[in-house]
Image (tube, rainbow, N blue to C red; front, side):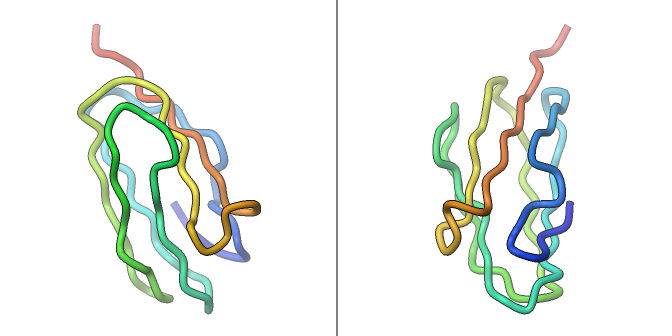
Length: 84
């Protein structure tokens, strides 16, 4: 998933339990990936252009994510579906 132009390339994502998401910065500005609300807290380091962050999701639920530097324009929701 790309981070560019002050946004996450996918605003709403649904993934199966255990899947990983990779965010890769393609922007000239710094960004991060931080949990606003969800089952398990996490935050990436600051990502400059060309850097990436990977997170595996082992708990089902809805994860609301934002960039702490751009909290209004950069938001994302990831729904982690429970297993069978």
